[in-house]
Image (cartoon, rainbow, N blue to C red):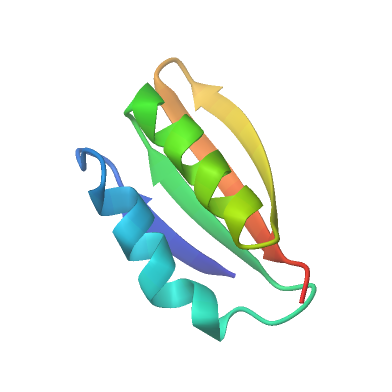
Length: 73
C-alpha cells in the first residue's frame, strides 16, 4: 500500500500528491493518505468521485484522518 503523508499540508497539496500516485494504483490496490486538515477530506472525496475511486475516511486520533483510496478500474 502506498502511503501519502500530508500532515501539515494544506489544500490543494494533498489532492495534487494523490493525483501524482493514483496512476500507479491498480484495481483492488489501495493508497492511504494521512492528513490533519479537515478541508482535505471533502477535496479528496470530490477527487475520488470524479475519478471513479473508492474511499474510506477514519479519524484515527483527534484531528488526524486516514483516507484509504482504492481503484475501481
